Image 1 (cartoon, rainbow, N blue to C red):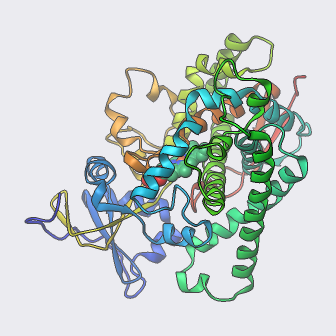
Image 2 (image 1 turned 180 degrees about the vertical axis):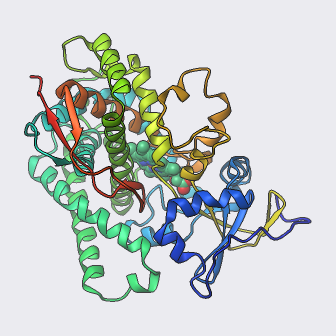
Image 3 (image 1 turned 60 degrees about the vertical axis):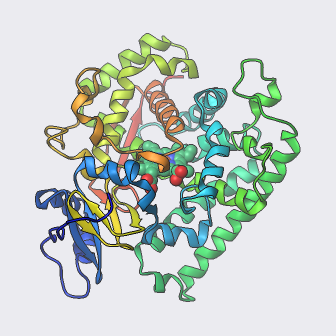
Length: 458
Ligand code: HEM
C-alpha cells in the first residue's frame, strides 16, 4: 500500500551513534536478526546513519515480494556491490523489461524436463568425485560440497563434454571469486573502489572468469548449432550431451556476449554456495541423528536396491526431500535480502520512506516459533504431508514473487543427487571436528566442519 495515516516503525534497541546497528549485525548477525521479531512486524535498524526496515511478519514480506513488488525494487547495498563485477545478470539486473526478457529466456533452462535430461550425467560426475575420497580421513566437508556442487552444475550448464582444462580453471577460480565477492559485499563501497591489492586481485579474477566463460561460449556455439531438444525423450545423443546454457545460445532473440557472460557468472555464483552449504549442514545433522539417517538409507534401498541412483529414482525419495527441506529451513541458507522502496509506502501501518532499504530474511521467518515450534530442533517430520499447513507462508528460502529463485527445481535435483550418492557410497561417516557454529556471510555457512567417511561400497 502507498503511504496513508502511518506511524514510525519501532527502532531496534542498541543502535550506536554513527555505526547504528552495524556492529551487532557484523558480530552476532543471526541472534540479532531473529531478536527483531520481538519488537514488531517492521523494525527500524540503522546501517551506519541510514535507516533500514526489517520485515519480521511473513504476511508483510509477501506484500514486499508479491502484492506490492512494483514499489519495492531489487536493490540495496549488497546488490549494488555485486553489480559492479557481475553486471546485469538475472539476480542483479533492475526490475523492468530487461529482467522480464532474461527471465523469459532462461525459464525453459530450468524446467523439470530440461533438468531431467542432465540428471544422469550429473549423477556420474558426483559418483566419481564422492567415490574418490580416501577412507577414514577427516575432510573439510563444506569445501567438498561446494566443489562437487560446482562440478555437477558445470556438467548441467555447459554439457558433459566440457574440456577438462576449462573445468579445471573453473574449479580453481570459483572458490576465490566467491571469497572476493563476500569481501566486496561486506566492506563499505568506497573501500571496495580503492586501488588496494585485494580489490585489484578480485577484479583480475573476475576478468579471467569472463574470458573463461567466453571460451566456453565458443566451445558450445560450435557444438550447439540448432535448437536444443535435450529435455525431450526423442533427443539425440548429441542433444543429450548439451548443457542448459545451449538454450540461451540458440534462442531466437539472442543475448549479447556481455549479457551471456553476466548470466553465466550469475548462475555460477547463485548456484554453488547456497546448495553446497545446505548439503554440508544436512550431513552434519545426519551425524547427530542416526534414526533419520537410517530412515533415509531404507528409503534409498527401497528405491534403488543395490544399483546406483538414476535420475528417475528421485521422485521416489519423499523422506529425502523432507530432510533436505528441514536443512534449508534451519540453516537459511540466505539470511539477509534487500529491496529499495521506490516511493513512500505504508507497510503494516508503518511508513517506509522512498529510497529506504527494506530487509527480509528467510532465516528469520524460518525460525519463527509460531510457524515452526522449537525452531532449533532438526525435525524432518515437520514436512510430512498434512503437518505443514501453517508453515507455508514462512518457508521463504527461495523467495517469492517475480524475483523468486529461478534455480529452485535444479537445486532440489542437485541436493537429492549429492545426498543420495554420499549415502550410497559411504555406509558410515562421523564428525571429526567440534560441532560447527553457523556464520552468516552471504549464506549461513559452518565456521568449520570436518568429517571422516568409512566402508566405501563399490
Ligand atoms: C538451496 C539452494 C538455493 C537457495 C536457497 C536459493 C535462494 C534464492 C533466493 C532467496 C532468491 C531470491 C532473492 C531475492 O528475492 O532477491 C534467489 C534468486 C535467484 N537464484 Fe537461487 N537459490 C538456490 C539455488 C539456486 C541455483 C541452483 C541457481 C541456478 C541454477 C540459482 C539461481 C538464482 C537466480 C538466477 C536468482 C535471481 C532470480 C531473479 O531475480 O529473477 N539459485 N535464490
